[in-house]
Length: 462
Image (cartoon, rainbow, N blue to C red; front, side):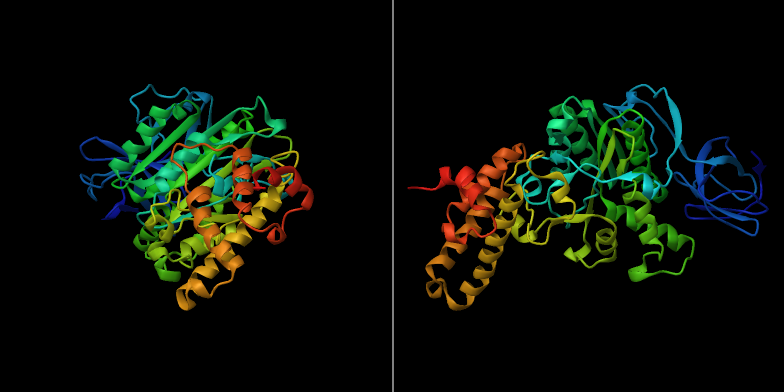
């Protein structure tokens, strides 16, 4: 651990040090101010003896002649323990809840280690969120990475805490298994931080959760670190303590903005819309840490929430996320304007691994057919709304009018639910059959006749 007094430049949050060799990207440094105060930083770049360091905090009080920089010879590590459950930390992993420091069982590199593709096991088993549009039509599976695409002003934070509060593994083979939530909030306001902490404490969800809260006025580099702290904690609980862990990260847009800010400070050549060209690789280093590993009982499942700038689903952040992850849940502004919560627009939604988590042994044998039939009927009703706006509802056939009414009832009864309403998968599927009873039986082309007799007949009048 060598100490240097060769600082040549201080530019914003960056410190430039000359004559430095044999250091690595991401290495942690200790910066001693002329006053004796110490700050931490991280190496962002190193070439030809020049090191660029991002300071954790402000650079006030630093000067070129008297500042000392010590390179600690390791990347950032996090001390982990089961004592972290029920605790709240800041974006650097330091206790934020005024509780005692964590006695670490071990220290882990926050960058993790790539999972050998051969060692990956296929994601399976259903995670019940209690939200019908997710459980019934875009099922979340253990080991999956499923993002939520939201927009500015939409209730994604409220949805995030509801999922964190209600999520559970309910398959018959999973009884007695431990379930935990690791929640990482990136670039949030103080008001949002209080909302998250109060909700977790009030509902008792904090007992099985670990919270990492990075605030908007914290340094940009901290936003790069916070998701990795959360995933390191999740991997420890899953692969060493045999727990099933759901990681919720909000908001990945703030993460990518921090990535762009740091790339700009390093004067890198920008890519699409000013974001760095390596953003795809960087995002994959976060998303790909979800999964199941052969021989390990625990699993890491990931819900990442991002706000699409201008509600543009083709924006680079949403676009690259969609390439890496296994589907998406999309929140719709039109549903939000109708005061429908959660405003999940099921038509552009997709869970690519849904079939691995549903069926007779995991949810119910009619699940796939019910989801397909509801999707088809709602899509037909939405199309007919546009047609009715042009030709008038009177010009529609009797069957078309039924589909038109179905779309309205589907939004009011299936999509809409109270923020504290926790529906079981049986309740969701039964509600689906009740709604499908509005349709003529001849229109139920995506469910087997045996299931209509077994599950649907009791909801049909006459």
